[in-house]
Image (cartoon, rainbow, N blue to C red; front, top):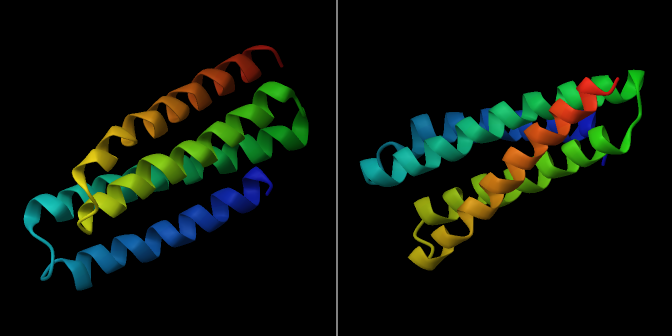
Length: 120
């Protein structure tokens, strides 16, 4: 999946998830669970924008660093936000150990993006 398409899809899903959280989940989830859900949405939206930026940069300069940044952003978002969504809905607490792996992938994406734009 191209970074532009991935960013657009993640952004759209993020808006739906945010609206769902603000309206439907507000009355059903405990406040601490809703806060976990909202962190997942926030990071998903930030990294949807990052994917759009990577996709636009790839149109100018297609490099392995930029392609890998996009993969790290996509994978990191799925793992980080996905694990937070699961935890908010009652997944076992051990799943919280997976969340930092997604965070590490997101950090790697930013480092790769920085290296990719520095070299262009």
